[in-house]
Length: 282
Image: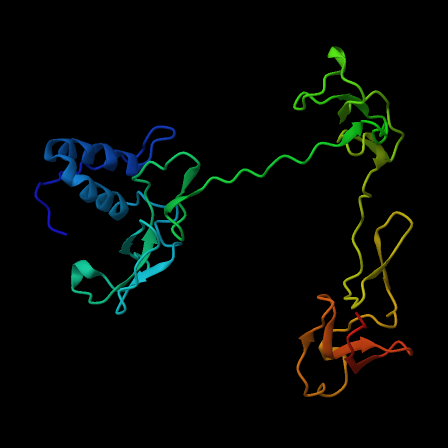
């Protein structure tokens, strides 16, 4: 890239103050000539920042690859910069050098989207916020109760108001913790539970063994050093069955769930054997 202005980069101090890095001095030094050269020098500024380490914290070597003989482009608005860790240097006669993608946000995204600055995207993407869980309903004509110790309150989003003569109004469950749970349990304040529930046990280390059908659990639900025995009808890993399987292909049955055809299944003797699954009657 040709330069229409001269950039004089002062050497940064050898001992910068707390929170001040060398790339910051480079960026500040570059801002002055850019402001004098006009908006057309923005690309040059970005290029200089990449050259002096203004990209990712690892020097820009962790992004997707680009350039090379195939002139592979970067994703989105990413820029292909030289990979400082390889032996090919385009400024020293290197031809068809491979590079790495770097991403600097240079645009404002429209409402409802956000900029993903990862080099593998480098573009505006939808800002999707997961919807809140549906409210637990109660009341109404059937007088539906709330789970646990939940309290049924009026739903402010409907048109039925019991304070204004509304009869058999439906409501939503609300939960306030009003009890202390015993040791080994905790209060779940979600309106769909609103009660003390058992705490998940803190399990210790287990034997360094692999159980095809899982470990036997103790009374607290923690895995032990014993393996579960295979149950007839369970699916086995294919390497547990002796010899090659039947040559026929697998297919989905009309019920939409069962996979017909050859399968490695635990037989009545608790041994993994090849069998052919037949579709159930619909």
